[in-house]
View 1 (tube, rainbow, N blue to C red):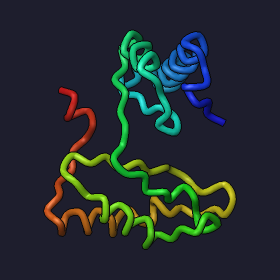
View 2 (cartoon, one colour):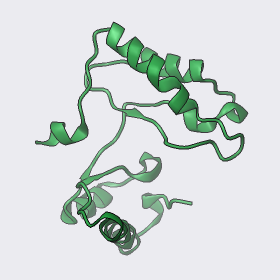
View 3 (cartoon, rainbow, N blue to C red):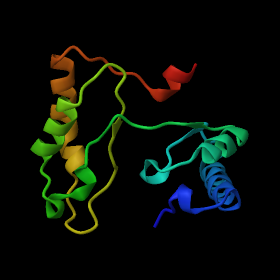
Length: 135
């Protein structure tokens, strides 16, 4: 389970970040993109300062699709899509998860992605990458 940064001291956060950075480099030989999402979105001002000192920019989200809750959590792909479309706003960032819900094996975020993109485009939204935003 991923630790909540607010429950760790700076001495606990630093190894989490550097271990992940080293694992990425050792896997593909490339440096990690300097963007960081705090697990659960939980952080303090000192966590952000520490992260900035390690060369990372924290990134949050505007809406969590909640697709990770799966059908066992009362979600459907339609509910995931509706949740994101209802929250649409300029500059929004949508939090979605890759993979299947461990309890029921559903992949609601993946199932909702195409209708979500269509709905956002139909509403006049365009898409970009985080990398493009920080340049």
